[in-house]
Length: 106
Image (cartoon, rainbow, N blue to C red; front, top):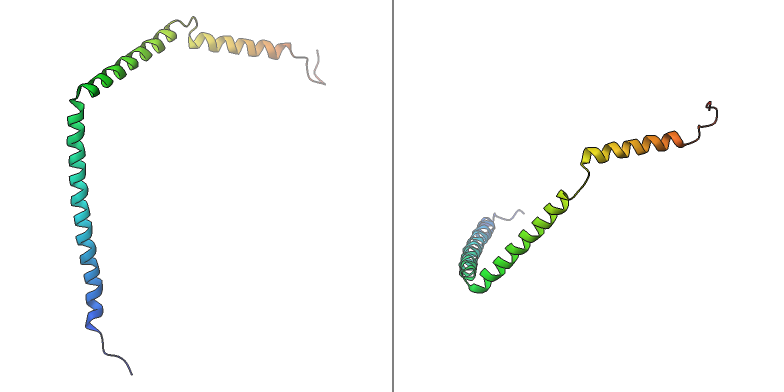
């Protein structure tokens, strides 16, 4: 004999989805509050003298590195095109200096 349909069977999936939705909503609200709090703390930290000192030192270091990289490039005595031409000439000279392959006239 077939059993009559169970009305509670339809309520269980609906109840499950409602509980899941509520849990996700709560989690989202908590995460939002957490990030807002972290943002406020970070803004507060940026105003501190320690953060400003570190920020200034990092900025000075970056400027120093940039100037060294730029000056090392400007001290180059050869442009890229000149270096390329020199490399091609050396390659052709090396190819011309190799003995001819067998069967090739000298």
